Length: 488
Image (cartoon, rainbow, N blue to C red; front, side):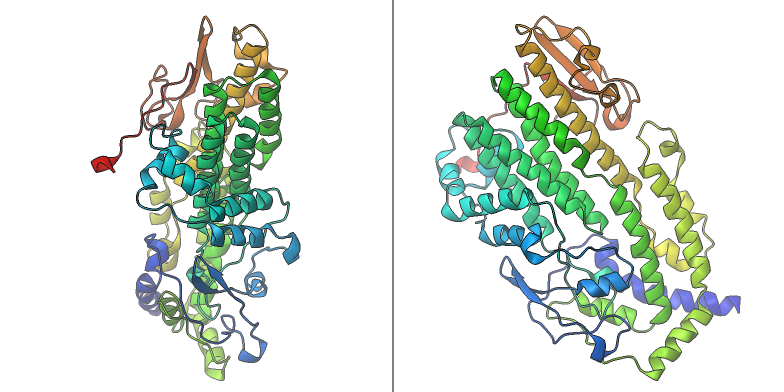
């Protein structure tokens, strides 16, 4: 019997490797451009199948995965009235913006990542002030201020949940870049309050996106938040903001801090993702590769014509042959360890003691599915802690600037003097377990995090702020000038 289990599991896993390749190896799958009927949910009869709404995202017609089907699969997704759901306002913004033309691309990238590209700004200004882009910016700010957000997911529910498509992830990131680039333009005009509104909108978009049920949404949410957060920090360091303006920034950041995205939700949802795939494999071992491959093909999906007696027999045999409860037990043990780690700061040594690869390889070889499906999540947890550290650093930078403006330009002798603005616990570097390292010299000051190498490099800086120390200082480094390639 054991040999039959090994053979059956290996055969199914072999088919899964090809079908699941887009998810396992991070490849981007082109969304379907045509709609084939209203396919029923996986294992659901055609008579019970919900209708699939079709919406357009950046010119592509997409079939909406029915939320009722995702709930049946175990995902806790709320009911949000459409008029209260920020997703639909974001969708308008996503469909409104114009992509930067070739001659503007480098200036646009420089504007959102480093600073306003003085000397190359005429075409960039025209692009940002384009009616379509200003409409997108207004809609993005409006949506970011809404409380409720429930995204749509896309694909063919007659297939595997692995094939869920997320075509809005890249547009969300572009909206945040557009907000920051336009914020830099506003800074140049001295409209710091309006610039701050743009940066805060980008951070709130990150909060919304992270609330989805997939890990990739968590990571995109972190990226969106980080773009806006970094812009706030740099504005506070580079601009001569008045005390009341700095106080407004500080109060805004304090209010936003609890909303910052992390990897915790994504890690927890990966458990549900993995376990639901086990159920799909066990109950439909012959249909899963076909459905998954079809959902990954341009042109639509496979329509399941309803459950038959053969389907029921297949599900019964699958559960008899495949040890699904044992497989789930091994997978749940792995997810339990990662969920516990995700709630701990990086400096907790158990992060270094947990070897993901060894944990997966310790699972018996005959349980092929866990070895195939269990993802590496420690990196996602580190990126989540990076976001928390950057958010703490931005609040600290604003507090230091505010303190100095209220004390004739003199920074505090120690971070403890900021206790009225920053709680002691928020002065702890997530990568060291101790206070951020702080130094001052006259009116100049600096502080830094140990960053991802968890070592004190004495405030050593590089273009990659995660390689050595993550440093914040006054005066800040000069903005690198834009030099267009080939004189474009």
